[in-house]
Structure formats: structure tokens, C-alpha cells
Length: 399
Ligand SMILES: NC(=O)c1ccc[n+]([C@@H]2O[C@H](COP(=O)([O-])OP(=O)(O)OC[C@H]3O[C@@H](n4cnc5c(N)ncnc54)[C@H](OP(=O)(O)O)[C@@H]3O)[C@@H](O)[C@H]2O)c1
Image (cartoon, rainbow, N blue to C red; front, side, top):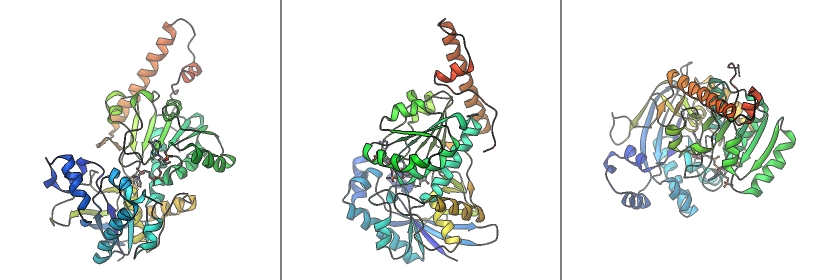
């Protein structure tokens, strides 16, 4: 049996209390200080991962306990040293392949240097994250009756490792693609490279709010540590697939936009009877803040590589080959990994919740149509509703 390790880190102060229940009630400045000197440690023992044809893997989540902002602000070499120490702990426990969770795969050159210095092959897990994110976006669009073929898609974090590949995979399904990030030069260069091969209209912008306003479908994969999508900018009935960790979509969207479907795109159902047990308290489960039996797509990619015996640096750097995304998807399916049920804002999206979201979008469209009629200027047609910024409803399509 091949074994894996996966480097995790807390995304927020709530996460710290989940990792270490003893941290509850301690002030944020103290926790931040403790983490500055806290060494990496084995946090979770993963067992019970079993493919339908009986292959198994076992592994460890090793914590490099720094918050996202600390991972971005600390001297690069110090961050690499912490992540490499976490991988060494995994190796001491028997791991033969390592994955980089969340910001440990974002810092610096997205895993390239860490892999070069690591005793075992390293992956960021981004190939399967890309595949699951795009599949989640399309599933959400189908559920919300969005006609992708006539839609505008916005990809935020488009120059990133995940965003650029997602943009390339979304383009063939939509009418128009808008690429968004902060650095205009990098965006322009990406657009110059991509545009000639794209089967849809495309443009780029650093004006995030405007790009969100124009889109019926949005995928967000930024390295921002702050919210980037606010409720005021979203179209009626829009679908947002959230891959960023920590999340990009403001919690205010859950509260103020019942007509918008937000889905976490990077969650997978793990085959077998997976168990995530605390190393320090054997017998007690580690709270991943995910439904039982599921894991993030980047964790899943690392497990798939172990199960398939592909002990190699599978995904590294920015500019991921789409062939890798296709191949890891096939390997994951063969191993029995599937997209997890829809979820957002720490809760399941039940069929009732979905129906309520569709209804809220329908009522909001009717209200804005009535407002147009009441203004007395125009006779109402479907196309005018569309031009006013809303999406016409459609029967679900097979994707
Ligand atoms: N769900 C999962 O399983 C999973 C797996 C792996 C990674 N992730 C998460 O996915 C996200 C992206 O990872 P990555 O490896 O693709 O990172 P990356 O290569 O560093 O790319 C980040 C992208 O975000 C853009 N960006 C950063 N801050 C922004 C802001 N405030 N507004 C707009 N764009 C912004 C960057 O461009 P500019 O700097 O020019 O703005 C860049 O295009 C991270 O949050 C990571 O933790 C999730």
C-alpha cells in the first residue's frame, strides 16, 4: 500500500479552534504569536480510503500551523522550511507522496521549489481542484437553469494556477469569458496567449465588481485573504463557484441574496469508509469542517496518486496542462472519487434550498420586469429582461 501526506494549515481563527480545541477563548494576537513559533506536527491520521476494486491508501495530514496572511507575509525561506519540515514528518510516518494544502501551494512558485527540496514527490493538488471546480460550476448552472451557451462567465484569479486552467475549460461552453485579476500586465499577457485559441468572445479587466455584474456564471480562485464578491454586484439568479480557501464570497451574500447560488467547488466524496482521526487523541475525529466521507479536491488528488502508484510531482507551478486535468479526472473516477453534494457557507444545499433559490430568482426577475413596465417606458419582452441584467429562465440542459 502506498502512503501519502498532505500539508494543512488553519484558514481562520475558527479553524485554529477546530485544530486545537484548547485554543478556544484565547485572543487573536496571542494565537498569532503562538503560531509564529509553533512547529509543524502530524495532526490527522487518514485511514479507510478504498477503491471499488479494493486498493487502499493511508496517510497523514501534517499541520504547518500558520494563517494565510502569515504564509504570505513571512520570509519565503522560512515558509518553505516549515512546509518541508511538515513533509519530513510525513516521510517519517511512511509517506511516499505529498500534497500541499491551500496557501502552502500558493506561496512562491506554487510548489516547484518545495518539490525540488523535498525527499518525496510533491503535488499542489490543483489539477483535480480545477476539474472539480469546473464540474461544480456547470452543475450549479444546470440547477439554476442558466443557458451556458448564451451566458457570460467571469473567472476571478484568472492568472493563477487554478484560474487560468478553469478559464480555458469554461470557454468552450459559454458565449463570453471575462478574465479578472489585479495585475493588468499579467492579465494582458495571459489574454494575448489564450484569446486566439478561445471559441468564445473574451476580454480581461481589473475591475472586479463590473465583471461580476456582467456575469451569469462566476468561478473564483484567488489568493486574497479578504472577501472579493459582495452581494450588491451579483446578477439575479447568478451561479458562483468558490474554489478559494479562505473563501472569496462574502457571507453577506448568503444573507442578502437568496436568489444567487453559491457552491464550494473543490469538495469530493472519498471512496471506502474514510476516517480522519486526531493523531494526538486517537479515537477522536478531526473536524475538517466538511461532511463525513468528503475531502478537498487537492487532498483527493494526493490520495489518488498514492492509490494509482503515481508517486510523482504531478501538479506544480502556474500554467497547468489541461491534459493533466483530464488524466487526473479519469484516475479519480477509476478510484471511486466523485464530486461531493452541493454545499456553501458551511451548510448543505438541499433540494429544498435549491428550489427556494430558483424561486427567489424568478420572483426577483418578475419584480424587476414589473418595475420596467411601471416606469411606462418600454413594453416587456424576454430579451429586454435579459438586457436589463437578468438571465432568462430555461429548461435544465444535459452538460
Ligand atoms: N478547494 C480546493 O481544494 C483548493 C485546492 C487548492 C487551492 N485552493 C485555493 O485556490 C485559490 C487559488 O490558488 P492558486 O494556486 O490558483 O493561486 P495563485 O496561482 O497564486 O493565483 C491566485 C490568483 O488570484 C489573483 N488575486 C489575488 N488576490 C486577488 C484579489 N484581491 N482580487 C482579484 N484577484 C486576486 C492573482 O492575481 P493578482 O495577484 O494579479 O491579483 C492570481 O490570478 C487559493 O485560495 C487556494 O487556497 C483550493
